[in-house]
Image: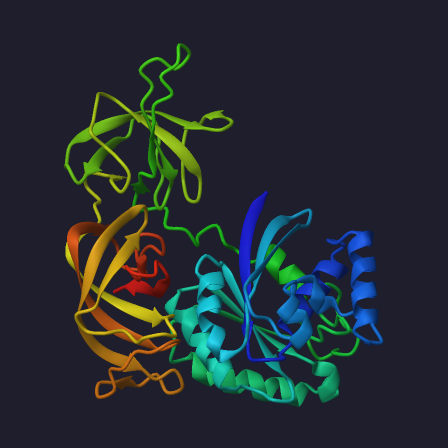
Length: 414
């Protein structure tokens, strides 16, 4: 079955956790004992009904405050697809959590309170979804029950967001009026919105086309580890294990090994279930090559006539996570890219991006927590990179503080 990853985003109290809870409940993806536990928790909190948001808000602090703090991942399936959903926080201080949850998503659900309309966090999350190049974006206009299921309210929000999204790099945008509390247009079509003729949320998630979301042209295989069982059954076995980051690999294909530049051919491709005749994203496989080669973690297998850029100088868009100190010119960090880890230095902070106007502020170059800016980096060793718009895996990186080992930034290579 095909796997779809999606994430929720939006401002505080827009109903993200409730929507996910409703989606899981109405699609019969929770067990009876889970529902009974929700009933008991809701009763203890003095709530009249069952609070479906508690399905994802599992931390004690989240339940006490009624907010989402960390990313909660939930897994469910229907006869058509398997799903991994990342329920992310809406508060501005947790934008870094939203970036984490959205980094691997096929679809982003951005929620808007029908009474509040488009707010700053809506625009901020839409910009982040655009920067992360999430292929599909759905604006869920929630709490339609509190807006009288008004078509005019829905259309006004839709027109305002379409005008804003025209400035972003969003190719597939959809709008659905919902009520997460009552289940309108979540799994079943609502009789309260006869003016809406589009699909329900679950129908959209089951049918949105995601097969072309991966890059199947540029063959990229970052080596994660070398497998040498050295047993009687696997005598002289040398396999290079990892996850396919792009393209299609087949036995007999001619490949180039980076950084050495040597060429060879694929002898066999193994998986946990046995050999396969082709490997493509996001499969995890072991590639066996003809001949003996010096290849290790951080190296990459590519096509001789289709190679990534090999460079030590990077232009990146950074989202800064660290609350303790801002990004600094000359700052030194550990850079992690695919399976490769090198040291890097910030050469220049070029500008900060205003998330409300998309204006490039060349004067204010103070990149603090949750700020987004364009930065020039210099690494101590060459990296094998693609533009992020070309490949989300080989075009992304994170920065790690050398002293604390905390992840301080996520970056998209330009």
